[in-house]
Length: 63
Image 1: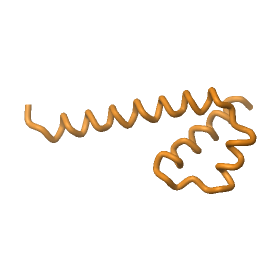
Image 2 (image 1 turned 180 degrees about the vertical axis):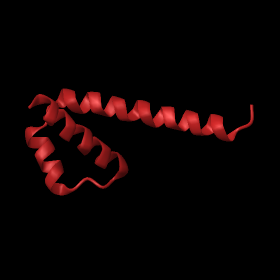
Image 3 (image 1 turned 90 degrees about the vertical axis):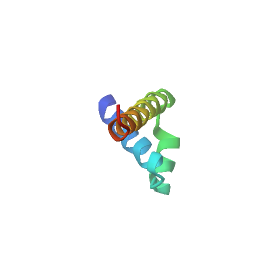
Image 4 (image 1 turned 90 degrees about the horizontal axis):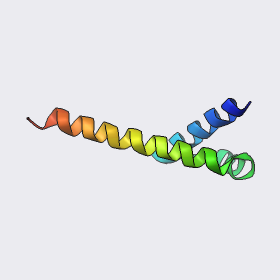
């Protein structure tokens, strides 16, 4: 059940990251979500975003 909650947190962070989070899910997150899950999921999202930017830039720019 804990992994299911973390999966829901990852989905919520991903949706919020792209700006498509629904009000229903936002309310659910504030009432049922764990703060530590959101911190971990947010850090994962930021690392993936920065990593993808670095990969894209290194692919586009000549060496």
